[in-house]
Length: 101
Image 1: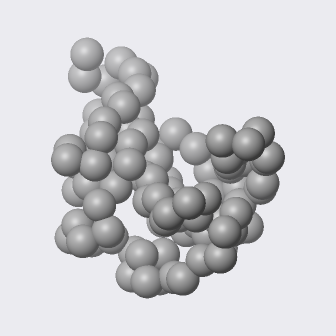
Image 2 (image 1 turned 90 degrees about the horizontal axis):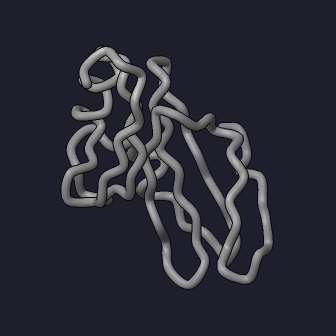
């Protein structure tokens, strides 16, 4: 499985920036929800207050994207597969492009 170009989907219990960077070195992408109190999270993203249907994303130089959006509540997501300009679709089917940060 290592060095195979696979995608690993995780929940917020397992997802972290440290795990994402280690997997990315082995050519494995990570996508998952993220807890706001994890070490090495982007403070700029986690502390950002959003209005309903707003999206904010930040991409590191190593290809790790942390994305935050608000529908009913704020959700944090980490991805090494997607870019900072991903499209987010809410439960009503509305699509919104996240701003490049």
